[in-house]
Image (cartoon, rainbow, N blue to C red; front, side, top):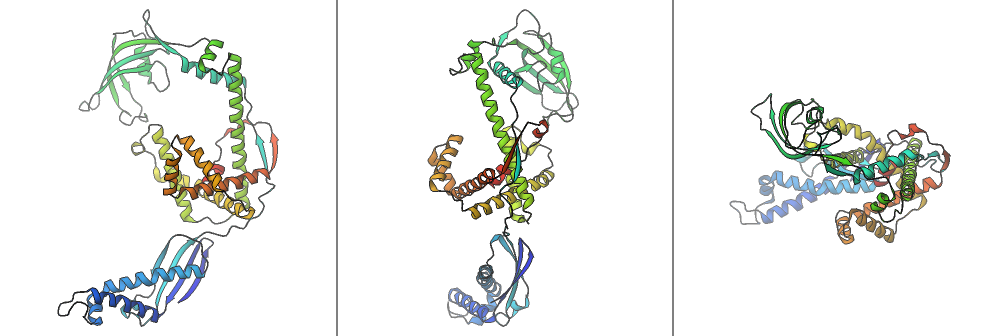
Length: 453
């Protein structure tokens, strides 16, 4: 067998393969003999028909099996001969169709296009200069958290001596009719709580329910905007008959030690609660600063190491990112199938991010190799326990799922990349600087994605 390797690019290779006539004849004879033994040909006892008759009667089947036997084996040998680290399936083309008409008299020539992992040559990866900025926690931040806790602790008390006011919650049963399409099915919903002036509440509901009391009935029309979140209501005019069953107002708890203690037994006073909130916010700010620092390290590392990234890996990571977007939408109660999102455009936008994810992952893998970083079975076991704890699933169930999908190897790779990134941080020249508000812009996810790719 003759082979010739052609470098198309660092990630794409072409192999020209020529399978010798004697090898083709041997395979042709073997397959023909198998058909001879098994075939029932009229006029001949089973297994006794002449080879020439068998080859004529089962011409396409025999040739197909010969090619299936010879070509994959030849491709595998050629890949091994040239020490190629291939990705995905090879793309195979037959060069000389005429050889199929005279099987075994001429060599069979094919050329194969394969994608390979490029050799990543490491330059500087230690001593990278980065800045760490930690967002300070202000008293207003603590007040905002406490305000949210009070809202969560609030009670809704009946209103009996007045009509509904802004911020009151009105419980209403609605019957709605589409004015532009009377044949459409009516809207009927019972006991809906409407916070007057609340977020997401159409202004017409607030305007028409102000002053309402229990047992009141109101009729009004709502013009929904064309970009309304509910596609079935977007751009529609609906006339509602609203029957009010209750009006309640929100009563916030007193901001005192008793309320703080009611949240959790670890809070002995309001001052103690504020201290705990500050500690939590400062810890979160430190974690966010670390993420930003690691993302900046990965950005600079990629800049210092430009190389071609395999298309197959980019497409795979793009799909992963798109699936994450879909899951996030579903978790927020949005049906991805009913959105008017330009999925082709979204995929193209995610593609650039995916390419950086793969580039970062390949660099971390190369650094781990260079530094001799490894992951022990004990470390994998601890990681599985952490996943089980985070997902609230039994450890053995998590282990079984990971083993089934090859996830244990994926975990080991991810942990190895994490160690490589830790090494980058440990060897970076880090400057501590004061917080600048502009750094709150959308933060890159390169570090976390590279660790997980």
